[in-house]
Length: 95
Image 1 (cartoon, rainbow, N blue to C red):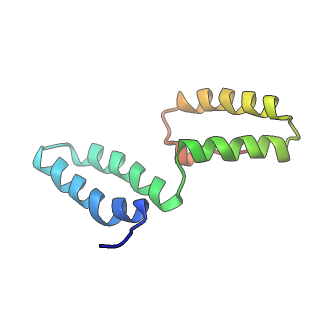
Image 2: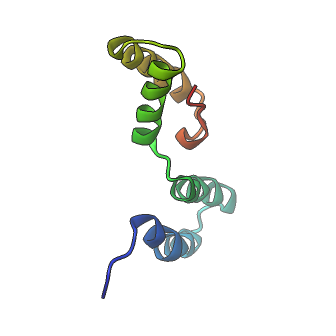
């Protein structure tokens, strides 16, 4: 059988199946493409919420010279603010 990266599995196998399944259930193509597009871009960019959080804390520490507790607090504040925009996490700025 062998091994496959999860992102490759999603992109090559699972997303096409999800696309076809949503079509069979009559889901709006606009909604289908928006939601599956988010999953696709997260896989292609290799960026999800955990990756964003890690990158945001590191940027706060290195670029803005915040100590660890302040960097974590800053990340959490920004996370809450960005979450309310309803934009996908892979599009949020790190700095």
